[in-house]
Image (cartoon, rainbow, N blue to C red):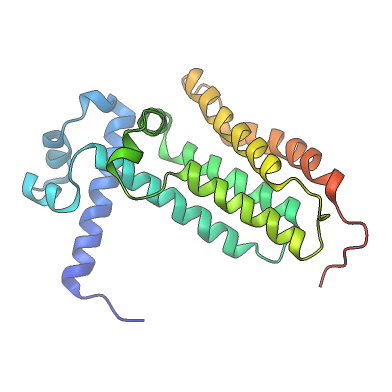
Length: 209
């Protein structure tokens, strides 16, 4: 693996600092009250430096989507040898945990941004909702192929049900202004949902390798 140059490393650190600072400011003051000037002042950088890394303030929201996608990808890589129920449970709660750690207000603004369709119009990256749906579908398909789930498992239906639940949970959290721990609620609810979705299609003849 090629080692990063000092300049490249500094650039990555500056980009991360801008993103982290922006998230903190949005959570504290609200998205509409956080300007590029305010972000630059908090980071002690010039506006030129900001625009070197991001095209606009809304680009911060796009960057957070990419971060969520990377976290989800890494999470699945770490539990690839587990049963499908465990993998879906860990995946689902990882997504919710990222939302909580990112902060309620920022998550609400990011959700509004994605729902508006502006994300799809302006950016080539995939939103976490679209990316998550693909990952879940791939997980279930893999379990069908390896014999853990029956061949008649309705992959699309199970994928839709789980994603709609997760999206709904985030929406509910935003509706109630982040008044509860979404991670705690997710860990209580997702095992019930996943068990109900997967159990009817478990292959009793499946033998783990």
